Length: 346
Image 1 (tube, one colour):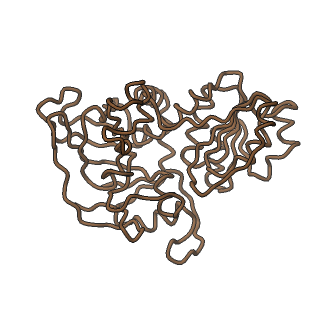
Image 2 (cartoon, one colour; image 1 turned 180 degrees about the vertical axis):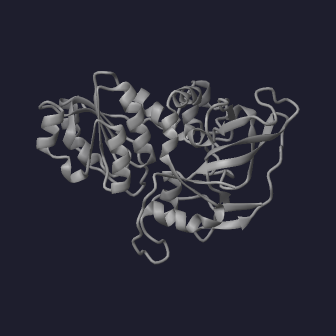
Image 3 (cartoon, helix red, strand yellow; image 1 turned 120 degrees about the vertical axis):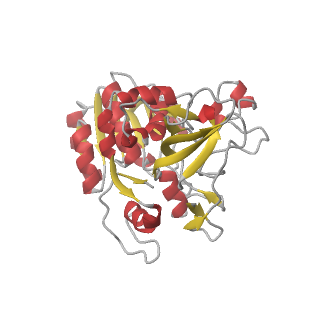
């Protein structure tokens, strides 16, 4: 089968790969129907994160169960499922403390995660333990289902930040995670404000948030007007490089949530200011028991599917990646970007 593999020469390449098989009685084999390109994939491709070579990338996926092991009782052949890529071990120190998002793996070498340190979903077939395959509601589209895993991340961050109906929330960035954050914020907070530099994505934000601004429009006069002379109670940085902006616009007693991924980004702050103003920085980590909640939320929010704006074949991955990052990897030539969520389909 074909698969997009992160190779030893630091490139995402289309390779021929052996089709995965069921290796244990509790495993299922899934035919991938749709798999999303995540910001973490882009971070690896653009050198902002390290990638494990020789691994099929991809971890946001939905598919159809085509084979089950002898002990499988949660799903059956023909079921439509969403894949949980984070394969917590249930045995390590953190799993036993009910913190599977911090799992270090049975051998202590880290939690197995599809598309990161074990083969993922940028391909046609995938096998996993039945625990990590969740049935989709019959009425749910593939497009909504493929957003369940990133939605679980968003819901976990909102829970850890304790976002309430009284909070004014600023979401920096309107990529897929930013727009999902805006959808969740609209259901949980008093005010949702978003920023974005890309006109195409800004238009999506304007359809969702109470206010959607360019970064230049996020100024004192605007904030005074929409926050009635105050600042924001919760600020979520979905870009991964915006903590200076967050610090500028956070209210006393507020919570800043770093969410975007960029390992090269550094941020210097004054602990004294944060202590005196009771400002919290909340790093939530991976989602924690959130898939069922994400499935319920998505079932009640079918309009989420509109965020899937581009469907491409694996063989078209180079052009798709260039559009997502806004430039050609080979030439560095700037290219137009008019997509929110790009997914690979068979």
